[in-house]
Length: 266
Image (cartoon, rainbow, N blue to C red; front, top):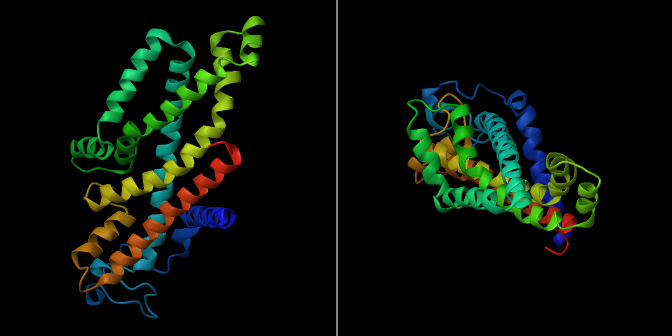
């Protein structure tokens, strides 16, 4: 059963990224073309998944939204991993006052609800764009990676190969970059895989609240449109919400599969 779920997760994740790359070319219509005569139409041969507000073809909007979700999730996770791993590895390796100071900063960011921090940052911008969204999500996204990197570094720096490198005269920077950070790849990849799904969920939530990039089509914005007419035209909310749920589930299953492979004891 575990193997089946792992394969399902990898298929869903693979399908998501493939659509993120080729989705806009597969879209049968312009996702922002207005057709007021065909608003909120049910699925039909002309519109396979129906239409949303302003008569937008829902399939085309979802395919373009997949690219936005791919760009946002990969960008946020990459920035968060770089910042989190560097700070966490420094704190764990140097210890002492550096560890206390960086751990205190991490605690502050972790204590503050991430979504509220995202909303506060985006609320400072008159017209939030894609870059603003990535920055807002990255500000709180690095914390978990820093904690994982710090904990792993505390264990790694006690091992014999680190003592051997130090005895041979390697500098702290070289030990960190050549011996510590590469060995953090396993736990960080596991965390990042699940983190991609979390970013998609956060981006959809912010778009649902009207704080997403205004010029682009996003799954969260489509869900927002569908929720306002849920009782009369349920297909918009069900289909867009279903895409979000299935994608997040795929990343969770893929993360579990990687954890079983890279960290069997976990």
